[in-house]
Amino acid sequence: MPSYLITGSSRGLGLGFVTELLKDPGNIVIATARDPARSAGLQELKSKHGDGQLHLVSLDVTKGGSVHEAAVATQKVLPNGLDYLISNAGINPGALKSLNEMDMDEFKAEIEFNVTGPMHLFREFAPLIRKGGAKKVMVLTSALGSLEFSGPVEGPCDSYSVGKAALNMLTRKWSAALKKDGITTVLVHPGYIGSTEMGAGIQAWVEENMPDLPNLTVQTSVQCCLKVMHGATGDDNGLFFNEDGTTRPW
Ligand SMILES: NC(=O)c1ccc[n+]([C@@H]2O[C@H](COP(=O)([O-])OP(=O)(O)OC[C@H]3O[C@@H](n4cnc5c(N)ncnc54)[C@H](OP(=O)(O)O)[C@@H]3O)[C@@H](O)[C@H]2O)c1
Image (cartoon, rainbow, N blue to C red):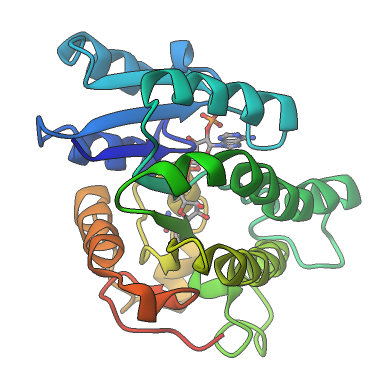
């Protein structure tokens, strides 16, 4: 049975991945969140899938101890390894603030989130993915982390763009390190999804400045991202994809 672990699944795209993956009764899903008990969406899914298909595990990506404990809990559920790791958790504090206006503590926290969070995740979960069958990792990034697309323009989400660009390099480095173990790691921009908390935060800006940008539903976005991850081969290791499967310049 294919197994999946998703970070940041309390709401938004993370909850969407869990919902979509549970549609196949053959999948085992480890839905992680900082506090699964406080997620109405996860609790509702748990009430429908209390048969061992869905496991709720606490995981705060910014805390090494929490990631370690989540890996130990996952190992107990999946002693033969984890097939797919989806690094989805994200933050976007001062989305509409310029770099000059950005609160320095928020800026530091955002950069740290994107750099040390995935470091904890890759270190703690690599042994379980090595043991798994599919050996795939998908990291949710953003087109705004593209130096070519977002670098030359001011706003929106400037600090977010810096954090995602750092996340891209970190993931690419890890993809090179994990390749020898047969693990395929891809970065995926999920498109623009205005219905999530993060997407809603810039909706007014998008409507004014990019009125033609497609506004995807959570379901469409997660189905597209999963298609990219499932279809990725070793040749795709370390690449930066859009949700439609095309590659995006760094
Ligand atoms: N929406 C878009 O248009 C869009 C576009 C491009 C890329 N993305 C990327 O897609 C991913 C999902 O975005 P979204 O729109 O679904 O965002 P969202 O609705 O704001 O959800 C973010 C998720 O991350 C979790 N999270 C925050 N801090 C965490 C931590 N320290 N540890 C673990 N989980 C934590 C949140 O959990 P809590 O409930 O605990 O806060 C929440 O479940 C992000 O990586 C984002 O950058 C989104």
